Length: 471
Image (tube, rainbow, N blue to C red; front, side, top):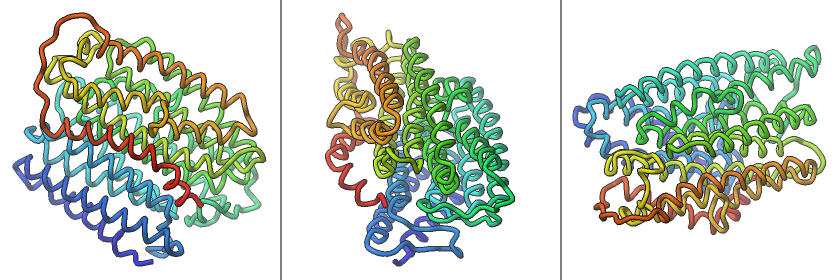
């Protein structure tokens, strides 16, 4: 396999990302970042094609492994970033806009590296690169809510990094090397270190990822950050942060957890159940649509951990379904969150707020935006044949052979989520009153439409594509 497309993608993200702050006009920085993200997405698709037609390719002395699964995941992350940047065109007028677009490219560089990492030190470097950039992004709106959310995010993110360093250090001691094996093979561990040491490393890594994803009980920062910061910024940060955490956990923990499958299954299942219930029940109590979507992100972190439970090497679990579920559900989650937060930003600008009462009659005031939001909300609910349905189906089905109870609780939580998503739909379409039509145009609208259309189209081809890249 020729690694040139992937190397070109990393070089463009790094080079232009460092150059963008020099541009004084935000519109130029926006245009250039869109161009680079589009080119990077195209190069990632080429890398995906090449990786499926040849043996895995190793770069930098084996520190990176270009495989189909990581290639598709990085393509999905870049797609979400591109849509978020397109939707942020109004933010190009900010004095900090050039910094925003620079930091988005640098964040993507870290995520694209960690998607293929085969080395502990590279994983840590990529994590720090994306994390620090995201802390700065959250505060760029320079309003009180963004400043508060940025401080909380930075404090909790720094805490997660400390736990990540501790967990990876134990992995290094246990393995005797910084190099990890392929994600589908266990790494050899030093016999001096027993199962308790590996258990400690697993817990530390879960805590680190838990802070980043908003896993219960490490989620305290997330509602204030995702629920209060400028939606244009959060539309980018949500899918990026989730991808960073998912890829870090998958690349670092699986080669070890597979050797202690019973313990890992219990850890992942407990965190999954607690997180799903907390996120969904808290979302039911919200009247602010943005905070509701923030708690929804916590619940979806619980769904992802159902898939992580499914990768345990135990009889009755389906590894392929778990890996397909993680991939497909991330695609559905990313598209939905980018589109919904872009829609909330449009509502905040044109209506004045995102409380459910503010969204009353939105279906008549902004019919195009509302119809696209409806599709994205239905996808998060898990309505067939949208992309979100297939993600939940494979996540939940991956564990049913061993733990029908976990599958049942996941389905129950998915049903609970319908109640609060339906509240948003009710406000948009079933609120009495006469409302004037609001003009709809511009790049935020195009991004929302693209997110909804891709949610429908990818729902039709997601499974064949995922089957092609799952080893």
